Length: 133
Image (tube, rainbow, N blue to C red; front, side):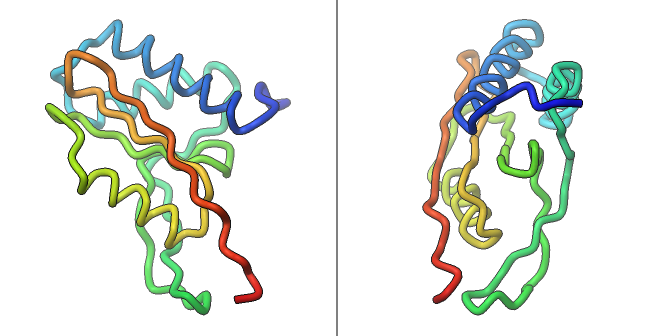
């Protein structure tokens, strides 16, 4: 299926809108897995490639694979989405996503919290490290 988005910003907008629609329907109070399944299903219906609990390698500075972590959602091979279902986002949640981006050498991530009355979505961007270093 052809891509339904033209830039990372457009892709993030689609994820944001789908998240908002899901939160408007379900509200808060469900387990994280319910929101993961719901958002994945909605995005797939739009023709977006979504991998749930997708393993991404954790790389050391020299590229040595140290292990894997599992992205809640890995979208179109370019976007990591970390989902939460808690009262509020704390610094540890932000550090978790930034660590995932840095160690997997990905540039774009969204942190989404469905667990509060107001949906929380924030985009994080890390510059790609110089591969020659």
